[in-house]
Image (cartoon, rainbow, N blue to C red; front, side, top):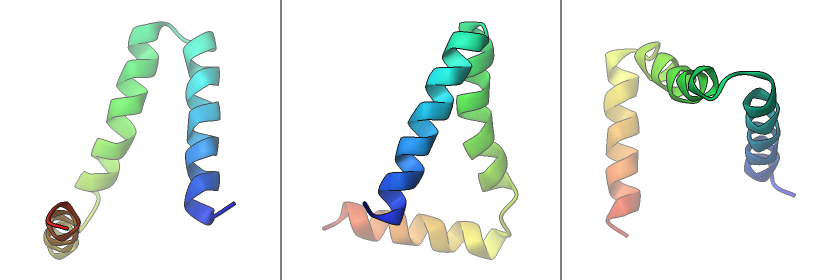
Length: 60
């Protein structure tokens, strides 16, 4: 199993645990808030690079 697949499987497992233990709205806020906080923590140059890479992959 690749590293990305392990990360995805772990994320799904954590999401399911949060869904069971927390109200649905709290789990929803965590699922949306963590990636948003990670994106906002990047430097402006890292954000530009991330957007550029994402656009290149979409153009394939």
